[in-house]
Length: 131
View 1: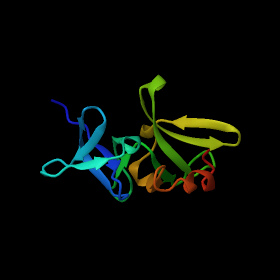
View 2: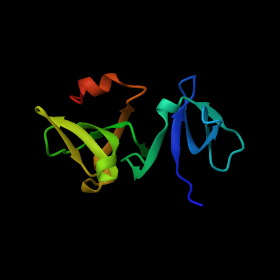
View 3: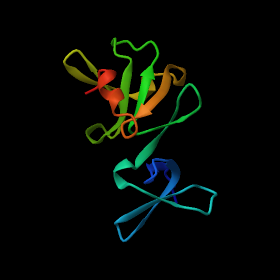
């Protein structure tokens, strides 16, 4: 069996990561690996772990807002998104009037820093030039 790491936010605004459990397809829970408790989470906040870590060793999840050190397009912030048409995670940012996507393998983890996420810090989307 393959276990995927996901995270979700509970009603108190706290994040939990681990495995995903559902009840009746209407209630969603995150159960931390190697821990007996589980936490009910808002399904709209559930996101997948990308397999990447940032320069501080923090796991990068779908929906995280990253600051990219030395970013080549002049835009230093991006959102991590799953792009179904390309079957992978991508860094999505704007450059001028264009929306651009870069695959994560173009960047070394030392160039990445999580500065927030789309649920807790939506103001970073606009202030960082991401629309």
